[in-house]
Length: 447
Image (tube, rainbow, N blue to C red; front, side, top):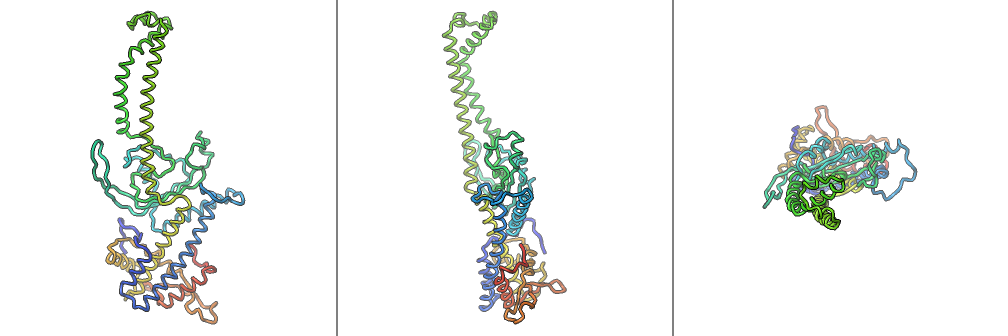
């Protein structure tokens, strides 16, 4: 069985399309095609039921961590219950993302993005000490061509690396941590102790840090120069114009301090220093000139900062797919879809293969078939669907009088040489139909 570093297990087609592709492959006659279609229909319904159970577990355990709850917990939780619910929630998060063929992104990779230049001209900083947990998964490690503006005029094409989908789970530390750090809780953009989830599409690898709710941004050195140089240029003529007023104020202060000799060195007429009105006029003029200049520069700085924030907001707004509890619902749908597609592909190729296949041979057969039929290269995850088929067990003859003592039959077994052995299409339909009919009291298969 070949392994590919640059391939992912994700199947980029709908379950309906995979079923149709199998039916149009020409390997099944019209009668068997109908049976296969019925098998896929019941299988999909059964897995929908199973993943619905997982969703209920997630919903029950997310309540105390939801930053936007619409229900309240009936009884106060003990510390042990709180920790247990968090553990179940995180385990379910890992489970459904693995089932959806997402890949875990190490925290070190996320932190590296902070030290590299972002596509958005911002200096970013994320305090990871704020988090009790920080989990990141992605799917689709791809490249994309974009247009970026040059320093002065025009634009240029650039190839960047992106994650087509990225999921982020963050558990913030409790309020006591932030109080100990002298951080005002009311000024935080998040609620301490809560779990936040974010689901985005087409995020450049260098912009992962912008997804964090506690990211702080500042201008890059280029923007500081573009902002600072004009400010210095504007300040020089202002200082030259106000220099007489500055000298007059200095002379008045020195005279007040009884430093007559220093006043004489400034070469300022004495009556101007001793007269109150010239000094007052000089003070007001200088204050208005410097104050107006400072206000103008501050306004420009605030405008630049607002522009930066708008750029970040616009970038994330149009790439956001879901937040918090809605993320779990989307992930459940994705995991259910992937699970069914994998099982259907495995079942179909075992059903239509003219010779018995080992798991390794089956894996290669599916990958080659996908590439031939759709031009899609994947690294098919063979062990998951094989385990699922082996774990689905039920009765073949449901009309037997002693059905309770009739042994359950798995859809898939292995012979002594390690070849996969699949039930016939009729028996497979009978087993999956039995499992579906007994779904509410059939608990042998646990997610």
